[in-house]
Image (cartoon, rainbow, N blue to C red; front, top):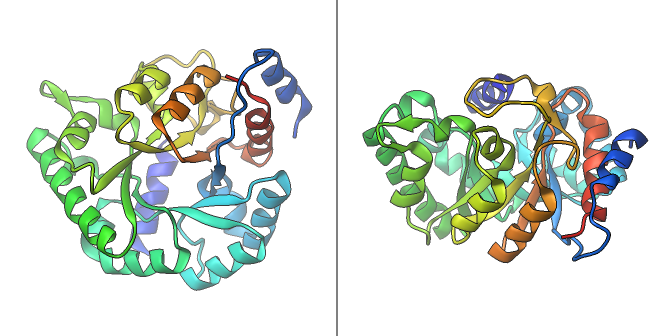
Length: 290
C-alpha cells in the first residue's frame, strides 16, 4: 500500500447488495450488537475529496456515519476544511497529523490544528523507515513519542501512533512495534492498531488486541482479501475489502476490542471501490453480533 505512505509524505510537505449478502451469511444468528462508536477515516475517499470535498463528505453522512478521522485537508486551509465537515453534519473525533518529521518540526502547528478540530486523539500514522533501521533508532523515536505526548497532553489532547506492517519487521531480536510499546509511557502515548496490517503480518487481531489491551485506544477497521498471504510484501490497494468479506474474524475481534475498552473505531477502505465499500462496511457493523 505504497500510495498511503506517499500521501502521508505529501501531506507532511504541505451499497452493493452482493457484498452485503456475503457479509450477512457470515454473521452468527444471535449475540451482542456492536455499538462502536465508529466513524470513517477520510483517507478512504481521498480521490473523491481531492475533487469535491463537499460532495464526498455529504456521501459519508448519507451512508450513515457521523464521525470522521482526518488525514490532511485536501488543498484547503484547515479552517475551511473544518467548516466543510461541520456543514456536512459530521464531527471530527480523530486526526492524523502527518509523519514523524512533521511532529518533530511542526508540533506547534499540529496543536493549533487540533484546537480547531478538537479530536480525541492526535495520531502520527507513519515513521520514516530510515528513523527505525535498528533498535537504537526505534528507541529514539519512542522517546520522541513521549515528548510529543507530553506536549499534546498539556494542550488537552492524547497522542497516538498508528502502525503499518513494516513496524513488525524484525530489527535484531525485536521489532519497532515492540519497542514503541515497551519504551513509551502509557500516560502519554496510546496506540491505534490498523487491523489490516496486523492480519497481514500473520498475527491474529483479536489476540493482538488482548495482549495490548492497556495500550490500544483506537482501531482501524480494515479487512484484507481472502487469499492474500501473510508477509511484508507490498500489496495493491485492491486487497483492502469491505468488512466481513475478507480474512479477519470480526465478531471475535470486536469482542476483544469491547473487552479492552476501545472507544474509537474508524472504518478505512483504501480500495478503488471505497465509495461503495464504506457503505458495505457500515451495514456490516450495524448488523454484526459477537
